[in-house]
Length: 202
Image (cartoon, rainbow, N blue to C red; front, side, top):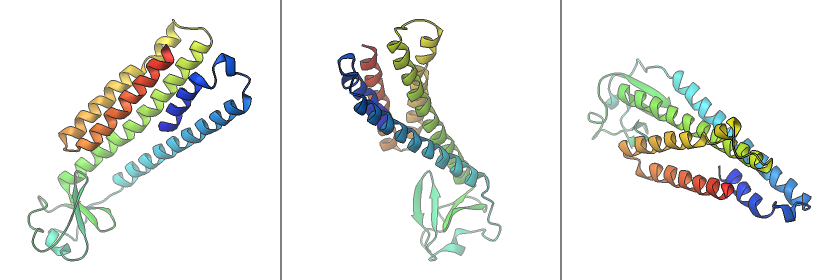
C-alpha cells in the first residue's frame, strides 16, 4: 500500500508538466508501482490461502481436554492470542470438548475457531478494499489528466470514500476485540490515503 501511495505523491512533483520529458523517472516510478501492485496481489493470495486452510481445518476427535496436550509445547489460541498449554491452565483456557488444530501445535476451541474465521474474513476484505481504493485513485488521476472532473466515471472513481467507511468499521471491530494497535494502524493508513487523495485533487 505504501508503494502506490508514494508513487502518487511523486507524480504530483516529478511528473508535472514541466518535468514530463524525464522519461527515465516516469518509467522507473511505473516499474516501482507495478512491483508494489505485485506485492499487494501476493498479499491477496496469502489471505485467500489462509481462508482455504481455515475451511479445511477439522475437529481433533482424539482430544477432548486440553490437559491431554499439557507440557507438550502446544499452544491454545483465541482472538489471535497464543497461550502455552500447561498443567496449571489446561482446565481454564477452553470451553467445551471440541478442539481444532489450526496450525502445527496450535489448537483452539469451537468459539475460537469461529472467531478465527471472522478475523480472517476481515483481513481478506481489508486487502481487497485497499486494492480497490488504489484503483479508484488511479482512475481519478487518469481522468484529471484527461481534463475530466465530472460525470459518471469520476463519480465511480470517488467511490473510495465508501471503502474508507468500511475500513473504519473494521477498525472499530478490532477495537471491540481488544486489538487497539491494529485499529490505530488501520486509521493511520486511512488518514494517510485521504491526505494523498485530497492532494491529488488540488
